[in-house]
Amino acid sequence: MAAVAVARKLGVLCWHLRTREEDCAYLRPALLRRKLRRLELRAGAPSRRGKRGGGAVWETPSQEGREKALALQAELT
Image (cartoon, rainbow, N blue to C red):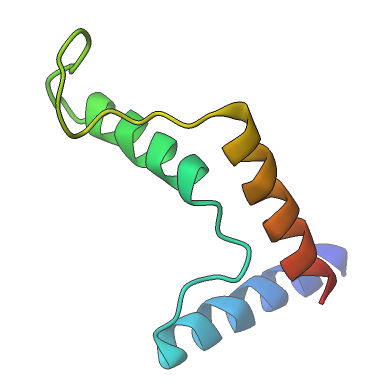
């Protein structure tokens, strides 16, 4: 029963996000950038190591902490 309940909650969440055309309230931008870059590399995108310019994904530990705090706050409200 728990698996069905979780699947239903995820389905309802996806439906609301699609119909309202809005982002998830718990989104962490730095984490999303890292995941997307990892997918790009797995798909065959060239590595950008040692190159300057746009495209590098850098975040400081304090920025990551602030994003975690915002996501936690959004979950609690």
